[in-house]
Image (cartoon, rainbow over all chains, first blue to last red; front, side, top):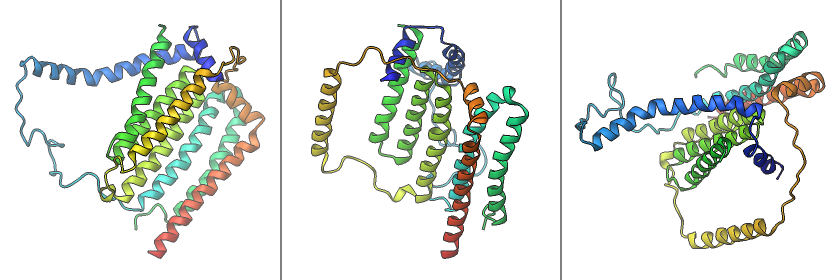
Length: 140
Length: 166
């Protein structure tokens, strides 16, 4: 309920510093979405107006224009060993959450934060070295 | 309507449509992709509420880690063998139960007199969060890395065990 109230406050009250900053990112996002989709939409419009001819061809409609021809389905059962890569990724993904706040607060803390983060990464590096020594990262 | 209001309704539309897509799309991989879209929409809500750190966590943990686990799970199981997801024989019963739940929730929401003043919400920027985390809560912070270390070693041990068995 606190959040809904807060949301209502924000909706009726502009000038929020965080929103102002993200508003700029929003404009960038809008541009990033429009830039690739606009040519496709224009092309579709031209087809409707019969300006652009439509001539489908098996070679033209292929996924990759050149290289080895694709065969079979894209959805196959992948090797089980990839799962370890996913798990290691998740661990370092969570680490990034902590390091993000560290990076933003760094100018206020400097050397103390530097040593603290080095300890943090160092402890995790032990796990990485362990995985390396156990040859978990090697393909067998 | 203010800009924030327009953005809120667009985000709400995106999240709800994506959430409906999760349960209606027959292909499991497409459902997982819809789930990611819905979770990213929720991250947008956090930004609208000026909680940028929560938005970051939402994108990194839900949009990144959880989505990766789900997608890897689907890739490794070989989803082709799974039957296409669709309404089963029990759909009238499910419709009845969920319909009753909707009516119940809507009457509860509409009949409740919501408090007008919920108090001031304090906004915490990432900067202050980082300062507090590294000054006052240093030990829990370093302990978090130990927890992650245990998870990492556990993953390696379990996977090497399964390798030996096979």
